[in-house]
Length: 278
Ligand SMILES: C[S@@+](CC[C@H](N)C(=O)[O-])C[C@H]1O[C@@H](n2cnc3c(N)ncnc32)[C@H](O)[C@@H]1O
Image (cartoon, rainbow, N blue to C red):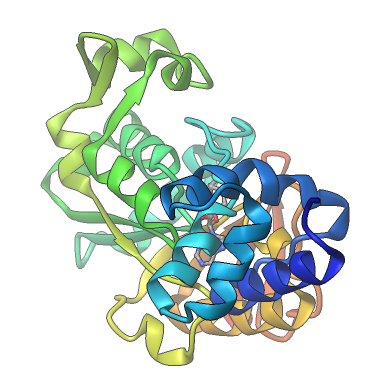
């Protein structure tokens, strides 16, 4: 006996309630692969029995852990390459010119996963904008999943991770080898800070966040329903400076949020600006 349709429906609703992630019924097998190890840790033999445990045990920690285990954390250094070229050629020179008075930049890697996106930004800034060394620059990475935030904070990566997207020259310059692992250099680590944050939680959830000059909201919207995406756009808009920028993933668009953002095209990528930006 495996899980019944009602067990899968229960798991789908649990994940949706905890993380707003939609899991299509065609991907039921993912529940088996991801949650069976968790079931064993909980002392039961299989997923079906684990669903029984979850139905009885309504502690938020266990339900939240299930939702975190179901997240897709795929990422890499300089993912998709072109957006980082666009940032270097267009967005960052403009932002730096605008912020020369305050000498302060705030960048948000929303849904940062294990931190490669935030550290790619840090390396890009160090490599191409040396004047920022004397500025107050902070890159904040946030994610729903505690586990990926811990990895991001440690800034330590396996060979397989550094072999994806990171030019050898940058690897040698910005990471240090420690046995089988590679560790981000102290300068890049000092520029990045990571914290847990559910993008879909109530409006209060962003209250501790500063105003950002640039937000990277990449490859996460696809997991949300259309109404959740709309709410996230609204909340993210309120965190962006009126002359700031929003970058989405390659396959993502700001859909019906045209009242909030205008779209510009530069270096082969779309970039969003708050509507009414100067
Ligand atoms: C595919 S990764 C994208 C990582 C990175 N932005 C990139 O483009 O390479 C998606 C991340 O979104 C996170 N995530 C999913 N739902 C979330 C939510 N409701 N709030 C915050 N992060 C969420 C997942 O934990 C996962 O690490």
